[in-house]
Image (cartoon, rainbow, N blue to C red; front, side):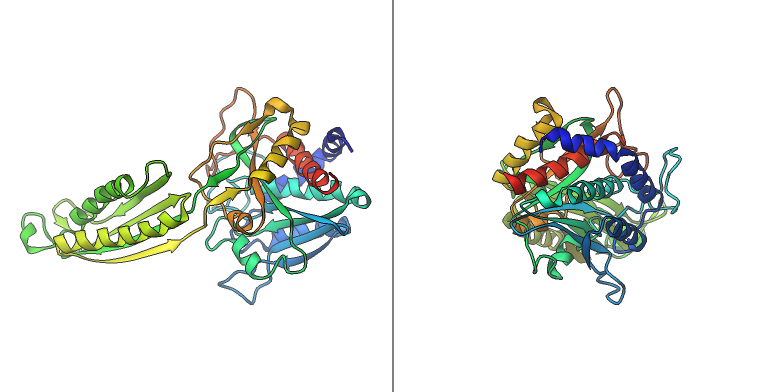
Length: 399
């Protein structure tokens, strides 16, 4: 079957894809709470007569039902996994869409509504040609991409692939900076690890006119913030990307008294997992030494986040080669790696995988970025994204 077949099939169900996307967008659910979203997916799979199992329970509510769905299409032979994430963000939507979120404070501001709709469309296309597949397609509708420890990690720990494991895994994400009608991918490091830093500096409050009677946690915190910039510059190979950022500092509430405590939050990101854990020790030592100098105490919590996402060279070559049949040779681009984070990394750590980006920006228009409350990607992209996923799965199983 030619690429044109898959484009035509995706075009034929475009209105259905829009309906799926809008329903999911109107009814967003936070990580590990995607119960209605999961039921919606299950209902569509039931209508297509596609078998599935549930994985991905909320670790804080283990007695609740799982929200992740693993569906299966095809026959014996090679196995390809296709993944879409299904959770939304704690964001209050600020669009004027007629189908804007009905759940105040929750929004699909990262495109997961688009991802899920496209994978449901992919399921319909591939089910229609199931007899011609020389292998199996596993459709992974994954919960909790936006919340640690991540739904991908938990699904793997629950044994999602114990019965049948993909030979390769593909994941797709919208890109608001990518032009409509384009796709981008790169091999090697694609997204970073992500660790959250939470720490409290404990001093001794005093009147600002009598600083010698206290220990100033604000001054101590300021020194730590500055020292962290030295750490990232001097403890990192300059050829190795890395980010250490303090994004929140809260302390005090008046002009003439410094407080007992200062609260800081930040993030550490890198592609180098070994250096990542070396930096944990540098961070601990730096905080300890500066607090000693200024007579303060501290509490530090480093919440370990996702591992780096590394795209497999051979799988990426395959994706970029055949995606040209869908998008055209000039519209399959090299993706610039980002210091964002993505729990698809756990699939990529166990299975040769490629995570790629679908352009959703109409020509001559600027879209807000991911996680922005005004994000409104073009629904025209649903056709190409759906056709591409279905075609890549077909080509892998039949080539």
